[in-house]
Length: 189
Ligand SMILES: [Zn+2]
Ligand SMILES: [Zn+2]
Image (cartoon, protein in one colour):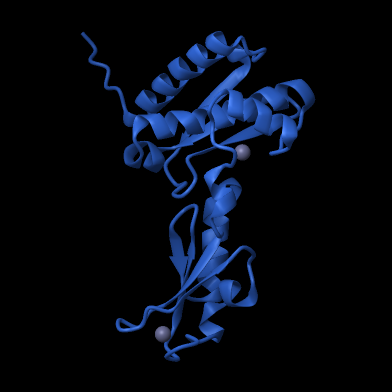
């Protein structure tokens, strides 16, 4: 007998799919369940999920974050799944999706959060590496200090800086590290 081991990623996908089916049935959503694809990201750190649209294949993929699953209560994680279902539905209907009025109406109906968590999170955090200094700053764009932290110093104590890409948790303290992180993350950047 072959013993099948269920990985955590399988578990996440299975629970999310079951939840999605229930939501589609309960709310009579015109969402094509069989055309949905599901993936789990082991890198995303601050974002519970996202929905990608492949316009050529006309396929929506809901990507769920393993860390969020491990960290959140199921109810909160499930609410994030419903948020992504609204995106998937909009993609299937129109090939586009944002957080406009129609999105918010349906999100409210599904008791899903209005925003993907990433929208409230800065993309980068600059941090002083001195043990006794708590200086940090957040950036939404790849500013010069984000790209080359080695050319800058802490605004408080003058020590060296580190940058964290909040979605992935990757950190670097030189321009080469920025390039490396960016290359390594590819589409997840
Ligand atoms: Zn969203
Ligand atoms: Zn400092």
